[in-house]
Image (cartoon, rainbow, N blue to C red; front, side, top):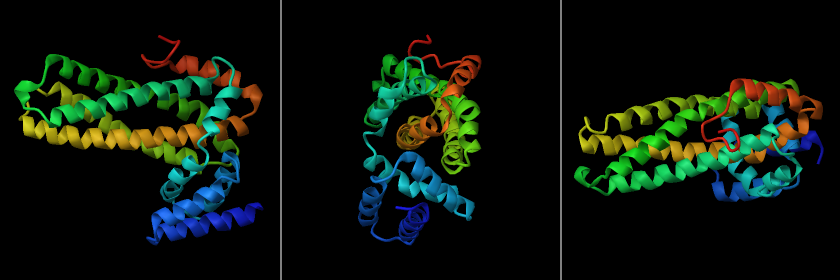
Length: 252
């Protein structure tokens, strides 16, 4: 399918989603369409729509269908990456972050179903540790924004990177709020604490999981395809200068 035809097909799918047409039906059509093109081709087609005035946030509608259609993209990418490649490190960090989100979800469920006096010191410590690690993910986001994103945008692909930056900015205050909330556990009325924990945990778990899947299956394969091989060594040096997370495998 030619680029113009891909762009028109994408525009049609987005219009139908935005107009409230049966989401599952349109997702199925989007999935079949996306399965036939690469992450780079899709990013380029999406970028043309952004250049014509489409809001980047509207592209989020395609992300789930994209991920479902290209579920093996990440596995194929990981096979190609040499040990220590910046993308390998970012993917490995994602694996750790997903574990934190799973733990946050588990702890939130425990807190919602207990009285304050039933909460153990260990559970409080575990929640504090999760909150601290989520704060530490900012080094991960900084490396993406300062090393990967500019080189992707040099190729004229700005839609996906802007969506990721937008989500980084949405996530940061919630991470801070969770960290502050946990520190105030003893001082807050427990029903108030539980309500706020539920709100923050649900937002972080759903949004950050979705964010990670989009980066793993859309952004990183696109980066690997459009960034020249000779530039990755310099990206690695810049990543080393920015620094790593406390949980980054092989960088502790």
